Image (cartoon, rainbow, N blue to C red; front, side, top):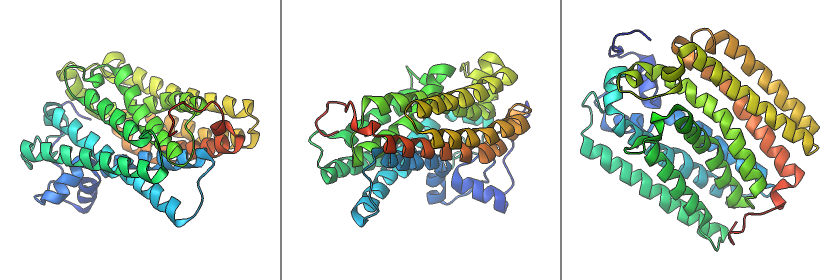
Length: 337
């Protein structure tokens, strides 16, 4: 990233695709529905959808029958397009001053969509997500509205992550962990609670796994370092410098996945532990190629190359946990869990 504000990208096919996905380097558009979709950043839905899949696998109680498949798809809709879309839209609303520096072509700083319509989109996505959560609780027969409570909790974390006065993202460690937990632990809990029991053991394991997600969240901060520095936000690249922050990111991603390897060995899932190690090795390789050399220039390339191995490792871990019987022990006492 240069020291000057990023210019408006050219309107080419690559820029149009990035616009639809909500990625950096998007081209401009006047289509209001494309603008709304850009605010929701579809590219960020993928880890939440995958997290639901991992939670369903960890429950040990998902079956390939129509009702289970439809319920899982509804849970993915809640976690991804609706509540992640809400999160991204409200984040863009409160980050409009930062985006005016880093990405002035984004919908809000460019003036492509009025703030009143952004607020309306926030409410529609939030209420729709909560409604789907309530419906899933009814389908699962929960005496306690587990999915609704998780959706409310996640939505609240999303709000205080972006909005003042708390604005958790002002603190690099706390904000990035909140983001990592929202993208790993919360959808996992939702998928597991929908089909089985959410236990203290798996809840704590996923919170630990979310520390690897903290490392991923740091990668997203490199593209915003200029605006964060100008507005006094203490992201890790601002606080420690880009080079040190890239090493912190890599260490968090690797160490806490290796901690999951130790857990899998401890519960007797040795084959899964070997698979997870084999999935960590290419991540370390891509860290050396992209992340540690120039995280500002190569952040997108790094995430595209390394993250598939991380999410596959999550699924391997989830399947091993479901197979081990951990999901049947020490259930959280909430009636509907």
